[in-house]
Length: 215
Image (cartoon, rainbow, N blue to C red):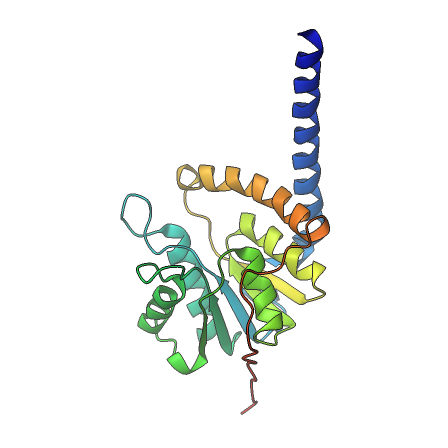
């Protein structure tokens, strides 16, 4: 049984190396395009807001959702963003992330005329790729939390998009630990999806290009 133990330990070591290398690659290759200072944010007029549930597992308000909405509304008020793509999961009629984001932004004074809903943003890869292939955007500002922004930017770089991330504040550490842990694995999966499996979004469909006119 000694050889089985060696094989098991070898596989475990390989997994640790792959996960660590994937995370280092994704963070180091994108961190220069992650912004926390509103004044330094490049002039990208369309924002992609990545979806999450508006409610936490316990039923209360989801701080990740609230922080992203607050950042999006702030960017609009400052004149940094002209239009939003709200991309999230709407896999059932009882769960609609884009619509909840729209409601929250409208409550903060953002007009519905500058909002486009993407109901097929089932995961980060889908949201980023659809912003280019469906909505015709190659230059975007991604709005999400810092730990999530690296993976979103990594995907956009793979698709030759000119993307930056304006990060929303992180909730308290005790509210983010499990999510951060999942993100380490999600980054490895992103590398596999892009470079090994060549994974496409689950849904594409007809183009709905967003065109911003000056004045």
